[in-house]
Image (cartoon, rainbow, N blue to C red; front, side, top):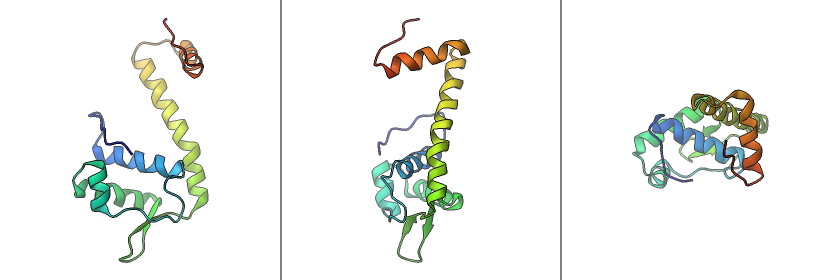
Length: 125
């Protein structure tokens, strides 16, 4: 997980997004133990309180759970993870489209840019 953050969204929300992506990709498997807060904070280069806030929110969302003093684990709820695998690409796509529209791109030309990018090319207008 990289530690570059943007200034358009709170850091704890960006951490949540990165952890969710790791869960969706299987990097953090169902039932897998996650690193302690301090270790994760060091990896993300953030304050442990920020990391704790992110992990607590992921617990509220059902993606993590705590086993007493044994630490935090990724949910074993495979259905929840499968839903995440579907919703993340949809969210990324919606954000991309919104950004392209904000740039003044006509809606009917956005798919052209996607097609060129998939083919490894570059659309030059």
